[in-house]
Image (cartoon, rainbow, N blue to C red; front, side):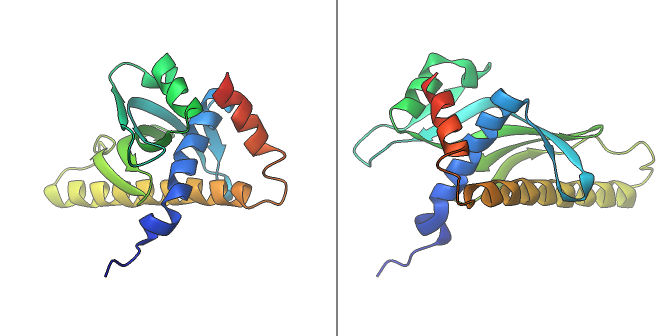
Length: 171
């Protein structure tokens, strides 16, 4: 007997989240003001993986350069492929994180943390700084996902954002 996981039942929301981040990056510059006034920048980097519309079709992975600018990426979206994974660059102030987000599970892989703070003089200081950066990345992704969900669950979503995003995907 197979049990459903959150990825099985709600993973599509993570895929929509990644596509929404891409859309917002290209149309609004990828800058987000989070609750509490924190400003964060998000961009998609050098890796995109698209899930096939059905299990009988081929998945597509684009690497290197700026795959979001390729005809293959746009064609994948137009053909109903869902953005399954993407390499994200997330910046807040002088801190920059790089990570691959697995959309259905919202799992971060291949994380590169910001450089250690200059005041880190010991291994204990470096461990504390890195832990704080992991926590900050987690909080930023959670806050971005919360922004997406608030927008996605609005009553007028289909007539506003979804329509704008569909036009963007078709361009």
